[in-house]
Image (tube, rainbow, N blue to C red; front, side):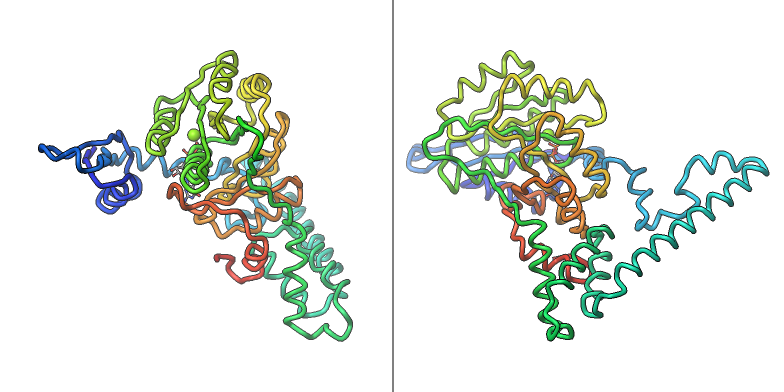
Length: 395
Ligand SMILES: Nc1nc2c(ncn2[C@@H]2O[C@H](COP(=O)(O)OP(=O)(O)O)[C@@H](O)[C@H]2O)c(=O)[nH]1
Ligand SMILES: [Mg+2]
């Protein structure tokens, strides 16, 4: 492990130096204000000193965190390169040890093929009456991971709205496509603080490693620095020492208070303490949505706190079906809005459209990188729609 100190007139400056020298995976161990020495030290404002470490083993860990929540589900996606009729049914492989097993496997392969052909026929049938220009956009949507059912819906809607004399007009068709896609993602609701209400309570929930803590740091910093709001943080993530420390470091840097809470009883106290703040963010432990006891614990905290908003954080590096499953699990405790993270790591913007189409919840923010506080934005639906109509998907 390499540890180094950086001093600058403000935190941003020190962090910039540190990142430049140590790389963006560097971890902040400590921050403090320091004064220059000498008899005139009182003339200068204090400087910020940060202690930063780089550890190879931690870099491996953070890479692991970035992987999709369920690698097996990613492999099962029909569009993914890993998909083939043979591995579509893992059971078939086990049976294939013996000769009758091989036969069964052959049958399974045939079944899958027939299914594929059926899907293709259905697609052809659906697309048959649709004009060529619109069909071209169907292909683009599919290439950008928009699911077939939804892509067909979109182009059918476009076709039905297209004036007869505009059929060959590519610009018309494109505009109509953009407009139609936007209709599916038009519910955008960032956090909005009411002027006369204090102590707005926002829970951030979601699986491990999706970016909950980082996103809270971004929002807290922006609200505090840019909007001049009074922000407080509470973390319930006490399972890993480093997790609570991570948020504490951000809180220290931003200059806002933070409480670490271990049980639902203490949560009420912590919230009371921050009632005069404009907003209180509650960071939760990223735990498995498929484990009842994990969700039960979260439920206890939610019931004790009665939040104004519960925001589910989802990473677009997770495949669409998993995203929807994760949502369904978390929605048992009530989800008001979604934040999609890691758009910088994946070109699969179609996953946003697919997820929202199925779950019909507003999007609050999109995050586009690890930089606190810059890499977060309120979605621009036109820009998102444009991305989905671009070959290759990346902005
Ligand atoms: N590329 C990328 N990485 C992100 C983004 N948001 C968070 N991360 C990284 O994802 C990892 C896990 O983030 P963290 O906030 O600890 O996730 P949590 O477990 O949900 O709290 C960290 O390395 C973050 O820097 C993002 O928008 N893009
Ligand atoms: Mg966290």
